[in-house]
Length: 228
Image (cartoon, rainbow, N blue to C red; front, side, top):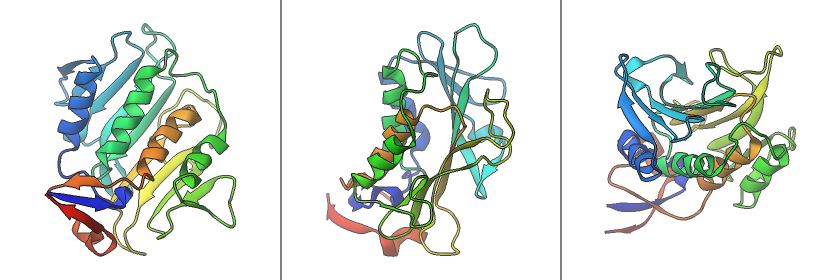
């Protein structure tokens, strides 16, 4: 077992399904398999859902398959989701777990209570730096290997906002310039900024995380704090 830092390059230890499934079970979310060979978890009030969709392979972000899709509705009987968030394989499960804990704690998961500065402030508080050209929308880690940015959404990102060219928070890790992405995440336009901030704060945390394996394309960028 290794304890490594930085977290945003630590990968998912090939345990993204199990770790997040355990988190949702501990929160009391109900789970059942679907006909698409996915696993759907729903909050007891029916307003929020989290689905392990890797087997369905719906689409990719940055050349990586989307593994988890989170969603929220204004009311449990609504057929339309207000917002969605998507995460590929490789995303650090600690950051996704913190996001889900924040979602679970919110009575109204579709109400936006903050602005973009909430996300950027969560990152800069952990030592990330703002982009010189886009200081109000973009921050990156000091090693320039990971970025969180408010961008025009890529295709297939679903949201209740009908306006053309909506923007939403995008996050990714690229261990070396021009190398394949380690992971990608996409938050649709209506995801409340304080929820994105919960993900961002955990992502940028300097606290070491345990891993049995580390991503090969990030080995040179990781620091092993200790072995156990």
